[in-house]
Length: 225
Image 1 (cartoon, rainbow, N blue to C red):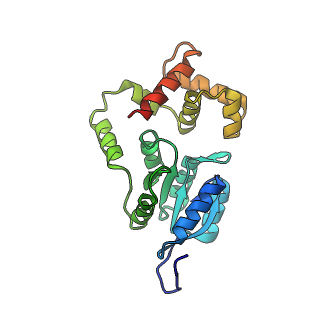
Image 2 (cartoon, rainbow, N blue to C red):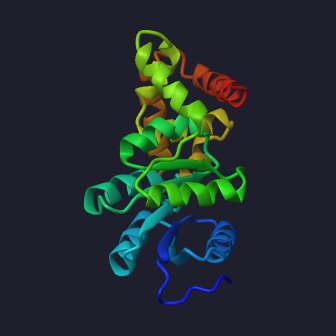
Image 3 (cartoon, one colour):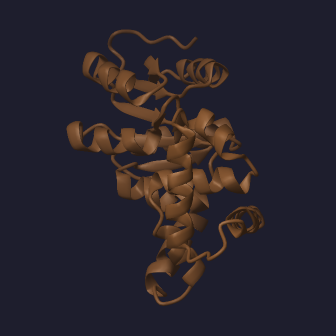
C-alpha cells in the first residue's frame, strides 16, 4: 500500500457496488495510489447515502445495477443532496446505451469494467479536478444525436423508456423470463409484467410475443457498434 502521510492531500473515495470481488479489487487498486484512498463501500442506495453522510467522500464510484436498487437513482440522490460530490459510473453496462442517462442523472463520468485500471484512475482524478470523463466516441454520438434529432426513430423510441424500463428491456434481450428478471431486480413478477406492457406500448410493438425478439435484436445490434 502506498505511503499516505497526514500531510498529503489524499482524496477519499466511496465505492458503491454489490459484487464483493469488484469491491476488493477496486479497494486494492485505489489504495495503491498515493493521492487516493477508499474510505468505505456500500451495496445499495440507502447504505450509500448513509455512508456519504458519515464519511464525506470526495467522490463516489457507482455501478448501475445495485442490490435491490438502481445506481442511476443513487446518482440523482447524490446530485440533489451533495452537489459538490462527483460520481463516476463503473459498470459492465454498455456505455453507448447508458451514457446519456447517467449524464442527465448527474454523473461526471463513465468507465466500463473491461477497461484498463489506468483509465479508471485517470477518470477518478479527472472528476476530482472538476472535469468530466466520457469516451470520445460517446461524446461524438451524443453530439450527433442532438444535431440530427429528427433521425434515428428506433433510438428515439428507446430513449423514451424510463431507466427501469430500459434495464428490464435489456434483460428481456438477454432472454430472461419475467420471474428471473423479478428475482434479479428484487421486484415482483407482476411489476415486471407491467413494465413489459409499458415498454411494448412505447416501442409500438403490437404483438406482445414480438417484444422478446425486438429486445434481443436491439441488444445484438448494440454489441456490434
